[in-house]
Length: 213
Image (cartoon, rainbow, N blue to C red; front, side):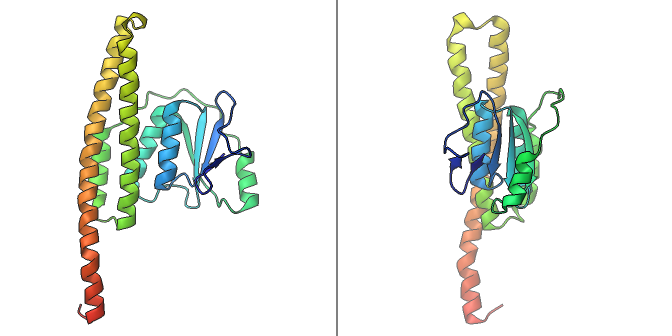
C-alpha cells in the first residue's frame, strides 16, 4: 500500500517487488493521489489499484470522470472509502479480496464527453476544486505525453515492428495527440476560471470590511 501523507510504500518504504501486486493508494482521490495512481497504472506495474479516501471518490465530478477513464484504460481500478487513521477499518480493507477479473470490453477514453462534463461544472467549482482539477488534468496530460514518447521509441525500432503493429501504434499515437489537445484546452479554461476566482477574493474581502453588500 502507498500513503500520499507519508509518500511511503508498505512497511519497507519501497514499491512492492512482486511481479504485479494489487496496490492500495491511501489519499488516492486528492490531486496528488490521482496523479500517483495514474502514473503507476500507466507504468503497468500492478494487477489492480484501489484508490482510497474518507469520501471514497474524488471531489470534483468532471476530473473524477477523466481519472476513472484513464485508470480503467490502464489497470483494474477500485475506489474505496476508508479512514487511514482507523486501524480496524484499514485491517478490514486489507482483508478484502477483489472479485475475479472478468473479460472487459476495450476501454475507450471519450475525450469529448469528459470535456463537456468538466465545462459544465467549471462555473460551480471553487478555487480548491479548480486546483485539484488542474493537478489531475496536468497529470493525465503528462501521462499522455509519456505514452507518446514510448510509442515513438517503439516506432523508431522498425526491425522489431510488423506492419500491423506499426499501424496500431500510429493510431494510438494519433489518439493520444487528440487527447493531449483536449486536455490543454481544458487546462486553459480551468486556469482562466481560477484566475477569475482569485481576482474576486480581494473584492469580497474589501466589501466585508466596509460592510457593503
